[in-house]
Image 1 (cartoon, helix red, strand yellow):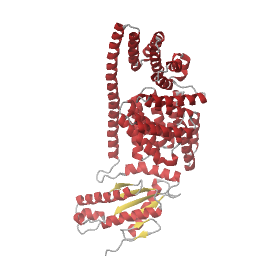
Image 2 (tube, helix red, strand yellow):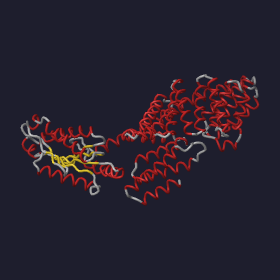
Image 3 (cartoon, one colour):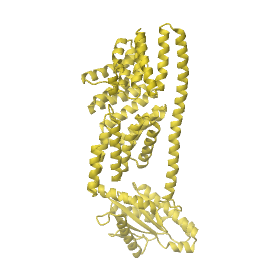
Image 4 (cartoon, helix red, strand yellow):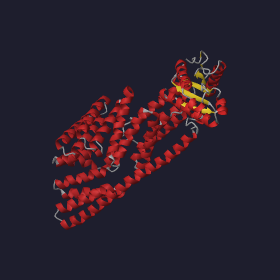
Length: 550
C-alpha cells in the first residue's frame, strides 16, 4: 500500500512528459511486484487494497494498460474469495481490451487468469486454448517476459494438458516449469511443480511416478525447512496411501487435526479435504476409532463452513466406516444418502456452471451492445470512417504518448479539389459515392501504415493520423494516397470530371505538441498545396506537383 500511495502522490507532483514517463515506469515495477508476489500466506485485504491504489494511480496517469493489470490482480482476489462470476467478468473485460490493442503482456496475464477459470467450470478445451494463448503472448514479449511469467505459463499449460488427458505433453511442460523455477530461485515454485506433477500422475494411475515426484517435493521442503500447506499435504498423503504407506500418510496429515496450523496454512476447504483423506488412511489401516474421529471433525467443519462438496465425501467415508465395522444396515443407509447427495451435487454443479457462464456471457452481450452503440457514435454514417468526435478523443492521447516516448507522429489533412463542381454537375448522389470511394482509398492506406487511422472531418475534408511516422515517411504516405485518388477510375461516377485531392502534412514538434497546433499547421500546408495549383502534397519543406498526364 505504501508503494502505491507514495507513487500516486509523486505522479500528481509532476505533469511533465519526463515525469509522467518516470511515474509510469515506477507504476509498472510496483504492479510487477504485486503480480509476482507469492500467494502463499498472503493477506487478501492488504493485497486488494494495494491493487486498488495502483489502479487509481494508473487511471490518473492515463495508462489504461496498467490499470487493467491492476484489475486482473483484483480478479484473482475476488475469485479466491468465491465470487467466480465477477472474477471471470473482469478477466474477460481485460482480455477483450488486450486483444483489441495487441497488448502482449495483458494478453498473457488475462489468458493465465482465464485458463484455470474455465478449468474450474469443467470446460477443459477452452482452458487449454487460454493456456496456449498465454504461452504465445509470452513468447511475443521475448526478453521482456520475466522468468516468473514464463514459469506461470509453463504451469498453466501443463495443468491444462493434464486435464485433457495429454500426459506426455503435461510431463514435458512440468519439466520446463521445474527448470524455470530453478532460474527463479523460488523453492515454493519448485514444490508446486512437483505437487501438480504428483497429482497428475496419481490421477492417471502412475503410482511410481507420483511417488517419485512426492519424494522430490518432500526433500525440497526438508532441505529448506519449509512448511507445506494443506493442499500439498493432501497430495502427498494420497500418493502414500495409494502405495500402501499408511503410517507415512497418517504422519503427513497430522496437521489436519491442528487448529493452530489451520489458522496459518489453510486455504478454502483444504483442511476438510485433508481430514477426508486422513479418515481413508485410518480406515484402511484398520484404526476405525481414529477414522471416525477424523470424519466427525470433518463433518463439523463442513457444516460450519457450508462445504457441500466435501460433505458428500464425508457421507461416502461414513458408509465405508460402517461397512468396515460390520454395521452393514447403517452402511447401506448412509450409502443411499451419499448417492442422493452426490446426484444433487452434480446437478447443482452443472446448474452453477451454466449460471456462471450465462451470467458472464449475458454481461458480455450487454457490453457488446454498448460497445456497438459507442462505435456507431464515433463513425461517420456516410463513409464508415471515424468522425471528428473520435479524433478529438483519440488524437490527444496519441500526441501525449508520442511526446512522452519521444516518437514521431504526423497527420495528413486531405481536401478534395473542386468537390462542389461534382455535386452541382453530376448530383449529390454522385458526390456521396465519391466520398465513400475516397474513404475506401484512405482505409487502404491506413491499413498499410502501422497503427494509423482515417477520419472524415466533415464535407469533403478527411484526416489521416500516422503514429510513428516522421515527416519524410508521412509525406510519402500522403503522396501514395494522393496518387491513388488521382489514378482511380472515376468515369463511371463523375464522367469527364476528374477527382483529385490536396494534402497538407504536419509532424509533431516542440511548437506543435497539441491537437490544435498540429492540425492548424497541417491546414496551413493544405492551403499552400491549394495555392500551388491543387492535386499536390505540401509539408512546409516541399510541395509535390501533380504528375503530367501521359
